[in-house]
Length: 365
Image 1 (cartoon, helix red, strand yellow):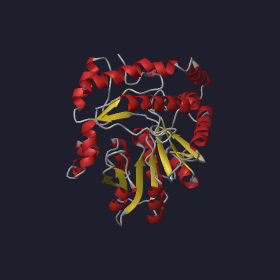
Image 2 (cartoon, one colour):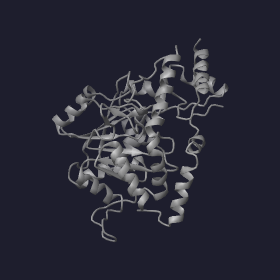
Image 3 (cartoon, helix red, strand yellow):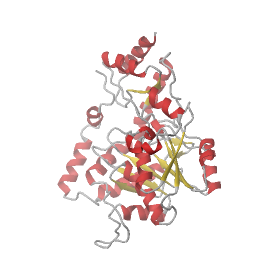
Image 4 (cartoon, helix red, strand yellow):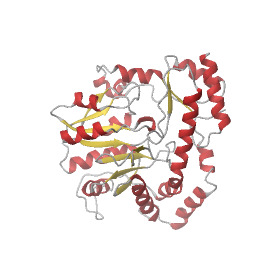
């Protein structure tokens, strides 16, 4: 069996360094607000290229904390519109609605599956106050046109960087391109913890301070609560694990890009493949798009290859968002109907990659 993602093998590839880091935290007796968290926040901010990194519980919280902090600071108001790509994972939308804001769904470009400046421009109304771009599948969604549009319209630009750790736009990394960015360190991510964890990155001192305060119950001083906050903090064990993994992230991403290049060069006849742009796509996911997605998935499963679907049902078609089910978003619905994710990870062997290519091509012949 070729697994979609072998997390045990990834952990083992660090030669016991992760286990030693975890043991060190256990022995220290300091499980929150310790040195591991401080060290990781400092290192990740430097890696992304921002002044601040604030650890939190998960990626959804990271996005929610940005929005809630903006509301507390008077930059957003309840009911304001936030433009979002319609084909994102539901966490993007949950963050918006969970903060009392209104998502405005925009169909992406059918070739890149990313939101565009033209799509954003058409969706802007008098109530629009923010744009949330999603670096979906590990591909950079930012463009100079999006940046100019947001500046010209006075819109807050937020990045959902849950799938694109280490991705670049020119000389800058995703997570440093907008006003703030939310990051997920779910175990399956390119930079993954051993449980849930997340972070906010930003150059905005005031926003960073508010995000940290809200994530600590709305408090900067013990038992004094200035804002209605929540409990959303990264713990020392997860920070220690991420601190071990971060120095190898670029090398791991390079291996993902190499595998993606082999897929793109070797697979034929399956339908649409993603663009391989070194640096601008770190291939958290390698999606293929075919009208016969379910048949291909079954064929690969029978022959020992595990695949996943990202994602089978679009957010506006989910029961919890039935109030948006009337929307016509044909590109999004086509993506969700046709997408299949092939295995890709830094610990895949060349022979496993060749096997996947051979099987996909034998199915299409």
